[in-house]
Length: 164
Figure 1 (cartoon, rainbow, N blue to C red):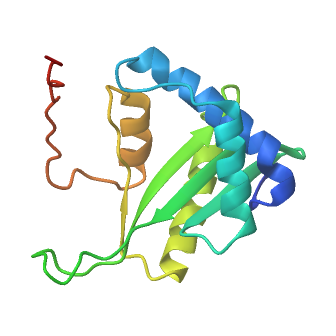
Figure 2: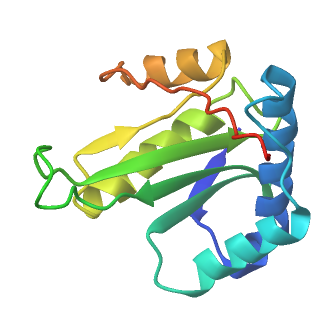
């Protein structure tokens, strides 16, 4: 099976929307308190905007036999402000999606390799893969590609003040 990874184009927007919505549905099944299925039009507008302007988001797609079956977004992060104690380090978040039926055959790996190259070309020295729910498949995928835990992200649910 031949996998072609290339930069996303404006004509890919319908496929990107389908990928985002399929990914959302999969994640909602993992944890509906954390994830949601976004509005289709909002997703379409996002991809059209990202692909039509100078953006801090790099989107690559994977094609198999002419069909877009996966994508990866590399979201370039701002350096920490001068007043913070974190050392400046060009970083990016990464989000990989592969359609069911195309997983486990190298599509995700091909996307990840291309994303790492695109990030390196932009001076990125660290890539984060945030996984916010028990998603053993995502942890296994990114771990097999060399991603490791880095620090600890803690969170606390805020209780909304009651209206009196």
